[in-house]
Image (cartoon, rainbow, N blue to C red; front, side, top):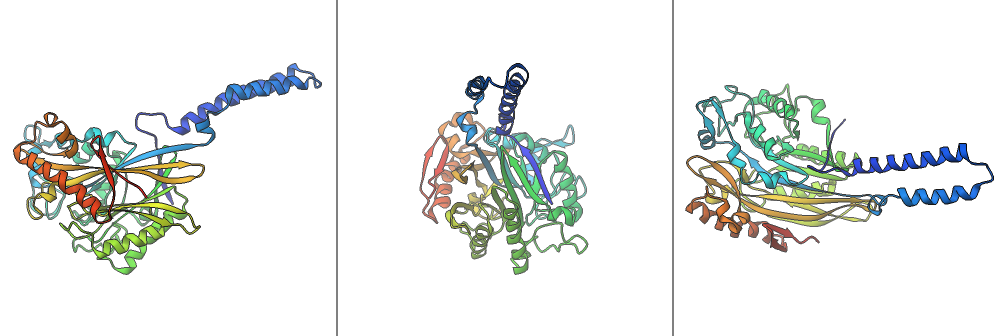
Length: 440
């Protein structure tokens, strides 16, 4: 089965709509000509037919761009979205007994909403108040068994997120019922999603999204579920590798093949893998990336280590002898959290990644990759995300950042692009707040 939705460019008329309008005009003009020839001309008057046809073509001919169809989509991705106690304390509103996470993303909302499609990893459950496991915080739960206020999802939607991966090591924190409740809630907000499921049928359904005439096949998995056993009566509820067990790795690779065989233009894998707080990928990650690319993946968005790991951009040989570009970011780091132990400042570092996909008659290709670093700042009232290069360029626009925060921002500026680029010798240039990566 295939699950597909059509998403046009945010705020713009998509190619399909324009083409329909043009075809309608052409149909109207040619239809009028046929009627005129049929009822108003004699058979011997053939010269007029030729002249009128030429006029119709001149008036209604499709523009060159549409005669040779071409479209592009820029997809944005961010890493782990988590809610710890420190965030709940700051965003809880006692007067209404509710939460308001708006300020958490105030500085990055424009960046996330301006591109065509935005993807994030939801590393928590939305099981509902008092439905979590462990010590209660305003009725919810943080580490080690996450259950966050449902309004978090509303805020993510308002911030510009379109797609959520729900497969991670905390997927079962509120047990299977928490998975089901999470999916029910984000469905009501019209998020696309993959990684967990409420039935075998849902797990087996191919997740295919159409954006501006380009089709994307998504799949997601997690390396494990923190030792929590997948329920025997719900083996479908989370795509887990069970500690990189070979049979489960084979299933993950087969999901990629299934998407490629379905004929999508691009295959996107969201991989929750690796070793926490390590800035280099493990052999499990690199070996599995090789298998995923060989099976047909075009882009791998990695998460879980809670720190940024390198990007690998490679040329992949296709079965028919052609080549394509493959992009793997082994870990995008924490997008937002309030982890207070381990990893030092690196746990507050992340990035926003843009990948531009191009489609025309001659085929599909990745034409641009760019990243901008992020930093999670702390105040007494807010824990939020700052785009590092934008803040350095215009510090007065970020009044909430204190002196410690500016020191960390400087550290993020130096650290993130070095980690992203150095392992695979990527070349880049910095302009307008983004590191533009040179493609092969």
